[in-house]
Image (cartoon, rainbow, N blue to C red; front, side, top):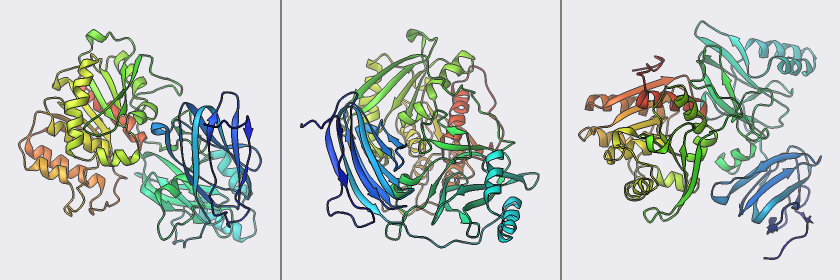
Length: 525
């Protein structure tokens, strides 16, 4: 492969939305202490979408017209993935590759924004007051000075059970979307007159806690808001210092976190930089059943001896449970405090998002992978425990996969930890939905102990016209009727790792607790 010079700079595209017929791309090999750059000239609010692949220790960075770093893409799953961004101002943007290794990137589209219609909004007292002050000619600077002092979102007492919570954004041109939190996908924010104040208000239970992000000036592609387009714009709330993960690199990394005044404290308190202090093994596991290899990490918690560990926890979406749930550090703490039995932690990664959506919902190939490949391989690695001391878990599709695995393979998995399991799912063409619930209702119970959790904000309907939380309630009813040992907990949470980090700790205490710890009663059935 030809090697680029120490700093390679090439002008591509044109100012304005009239782009050259060939969209910009680059490939090469970068050495340590050098970088390769390409320049993109963009109009304000244009959306750039692309993909990249790399080998070695390579990062892709974006620099704005002022020369400051804006975005940083690294550690892409399986050395590749999409990238995207929205030009906040017109000018020359630089895509820079640095590190050491081979790389290739391609811009696949550049899209101009369009403005959507707005609905009549709910308002809190602060927004109503500033609506009048703006109409009287007062500049919005005083509002933003107030936000700078108190932080965002703005929380006002509404009743004995609910707070009125207002999320705010400054300075968008066409629209702002709130993603996550009390709305499962996205909700449009509202502009206050012609000012630079954008807001959206909800009445939320006072024990609510969740993660959220915001997306200003999201372009429309056809009639739909594509997931990839939204991903390019999503960023944390610049007026909220609480983030997940706590060591987020920039505003585009991680999510903002809201915990209202009556939200319970975190089940396991971790220092911001606290990492697992035990021993790691990272392996590549080939799979004939799935046709692709994947990374599997095995963690031996701090202060434990391998020959004395007789419990095992297996989690899907391993990278997220390592970095966002911080499962290794959590296990270290729970074990050191004498709250759970010492256990192996096995983190199973996905090759990519497309593979995740194909592999985790119930299918024979994945059952074969678990039964004939993963579990025998773990035994050969010295990681083994009896079924009653082995738990399998995950969130969303991972929760669905864990429940299905234990139902199909109780000889391996005697415990399930399902967090926001996607039990609404059914195969393509099955209009009834909730496939796994129907299968378990029509079969005899297997010897499995189950911990399930879901959030009251996971209430938007799916393609099967049943929400995630409704599907979890239904499965809980079915499992109880069938005689399963099941604990189901609902809380004022959403589809995120704010909920799943706590649920992981509570679930482990319930399944593998040294003492019988009573799970908090919020929503307990």
